[in-house]
Length: 302
View (cartoon, rainbow, N blue to C red):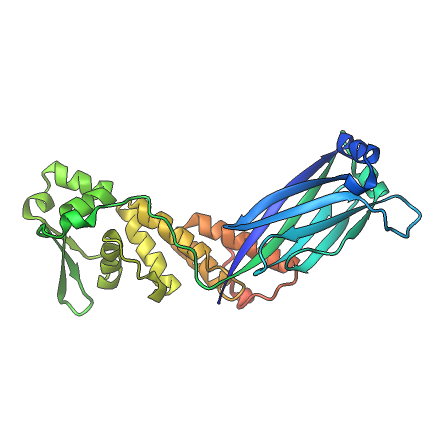
């Protein structure tokens, strides 16, 4: 079973008009709601209405929070800025208990005719496997089966030996505008049908080529290797591979590895989307007192 962590950080705007409409409705049907999507097939809903069961003398609104997926757990906090107050839903799996929210809280919160509630939290989604990542480039590999591979990539290894990999030029052109321009330019590589790569190792290059042919072997890669593969994709402007690696890593961010991934992003100055995602995750974990492995080794660099 795999755990996928997804954050929520948004604002729910409730106007004075919304509250007045609630007041004028029968209690049993009086509510407003806010829905969203945390992940594929994981929807959530906040519902706000008047409580008919409250034992308090003051008029009370109540709120509950529900998720449509039984294999998802959520921890959500609501922040009412103007009144410096907070309400939380902890370890919700399907539907939370009702939480009373004094009507005065909303009336005190109303500013310029509206109340803004910051919603922050995290969904922990359990799945038997990670989602399939779609490819932005689709090649009919059947057309290549009887076609000779007409281009050689030579990779210099650490021990001085060279590794040779054969590939179709058309595949390279489909995947990379850099290679496409190379083949059209009349450069030496386009004439000799050979390219020598000295700044990437065999593991990185062969993984990229396997990806070009529709194979996905990244489950065996550690994060450092994935960042190196991303560097290769970035050099040759292989958008399909860069997008794939970004989403692949984002599915795997957790309190156990977020520091490692964040530090790799900072050190390599790449995958900025992942860096920002990790930073937000670290901030959330700190604010919510969620233990993070190796938290004292975060690289402090903008």
